[in-house]
Length: 64
Image (cartoon, rainbow, N blue to C red; front, top):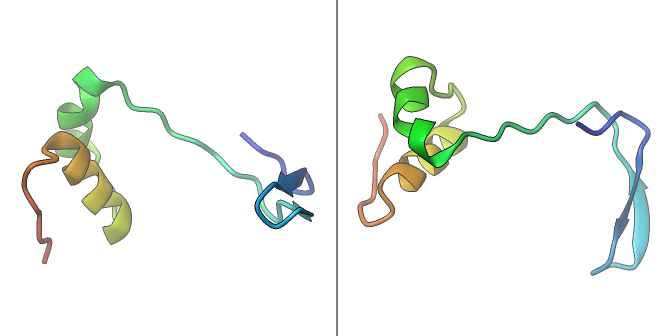
């Protein structure tokens, strides 16, 4: 978790910026991804697409 106001240094740009809002990270173990997708999933399309890609990287998923 990153708290709002935390300075972050961007090595590519050589500048420091500050996190505006608290940031949370979600780590899902490889063995639990399918269960997470079935029981919880995501409402944000790009996140759901990344989850589907993580479940089966050899196929493209198109969500309605």
